[in-house]
Image 1 (cartoon, rainbow, N blue to C red):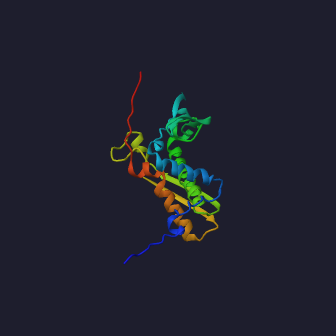
Image 2 (cartoon, one colour):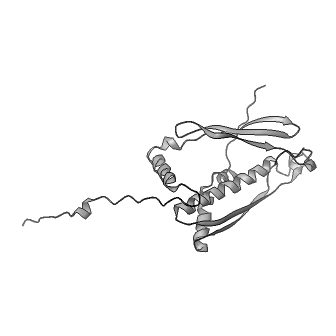
Image 3 (cartoon, rainbow, N blue to C red):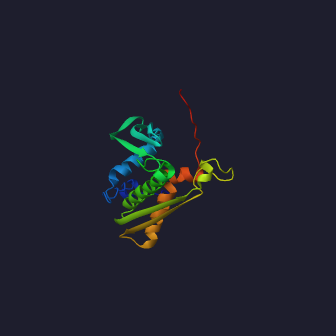
Length: 202
């Protein structure tokens, strides 16, 4: 007995590639998806090295510059050099020429979570109306001042409170925030730690 098998055009055709959602929340989602696809195909493109160069000004005041970095297989550069002044307030014997370094840490976490929320919401077709973050950290100066070996130098705890509004149910917005936290580089560094070395040239 001879059986003839007919294969239809529908089964032969590959599934159509899903188009990325249109730009949303100020996020260029087509470029975002193209970047994800490019990195998925060439893992070496995912390797980045960021740099901050700092110079002391006076007292506790310093200025850090972020200009060049390595990524996507080549040296890259910001469109303009970004500067960040760091100092201590008068109550901590500084001239208050900028936030303290530990405040920058809180700002970095807020910015990382916020950018993640914007990207993920855009990718999921959610238009955001508001994203606000308040990040607080508790620190006991007895550690920094060498007054107690029982007190750590850094934060004892950090709390981030997010307010998010958009054209999606509360449950979906909560899922977006959870995903932003799960993919946040700064959250990962703070919660999992990272090896840090300090060299010196005299």
